[in-house]
Picture 1: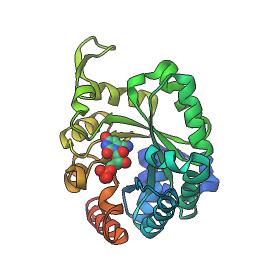
Picture 2: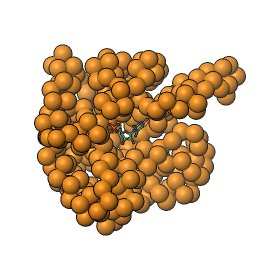
Picture 3: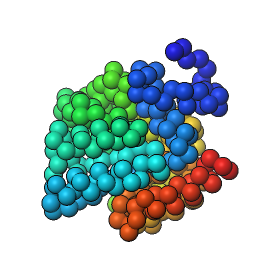
Length: 283
Ligand code: 6CN
């Protein structure tokens, strides 16, 4: 398939819906793939499947059951190390990824990769080999011999890289919010603004910005526009508001406990989806 036009022209033309197919992965970046899933299903919810139970078998079973019950209402699932550590990458987490793909749901590994280049590349290789479609990385390690190998690997395998830009917790201000001297201009700038600039240069598939800081979402959206999608965790239990985050520029919402800890996760995910549908897809 030959692709023409800029990405935004192609989105407007509705071209991506025809691209949704794992068999055609070579023509889709992760940004395009999740965008297509999101538009087709009219949801922007990424389920954070962070269930943590003392019994590992129960953890796997319940995680699978939740994924199956909510899959209609989500455009991706995100796993983090609290599920990969007890279940094992190739003996449990990979089963969840395979099940997600069976349900046509892309899977993101929230590894917050944060080391020197060669170990970053090895870690990313493991997650991609286990089937994950994208990894989350920390920008503090920088590009050269830091994240560059991860981006190169991801490009070679048609996988995605999402970069933390301003986290949702209180301590985020200490790192992401500090003032630094911009190495390009020598002038003071907020660290998260520098990261947003860098993400454009790196051609990241997404930036993660806490829904608890809508003003940061707005500023980052001003910098990256629609070139990079903003993923916002922190709605519900952490205090962020869905409508406010979306109006500020969040494209995707990462939601965990408010769905998987609800009495009826399917119904909780359906209600979230109804709210975002009105804001993003029917507005
Ligand atoms: O909706 P909950 O608060 O239960 O979960 C939020 C999810 C968790 O998986 C957490 O690891 O989003 C993740 N997260 C991320 C970045 C951040 O700044 N804050 C978060 O809560 C990510 N990725």
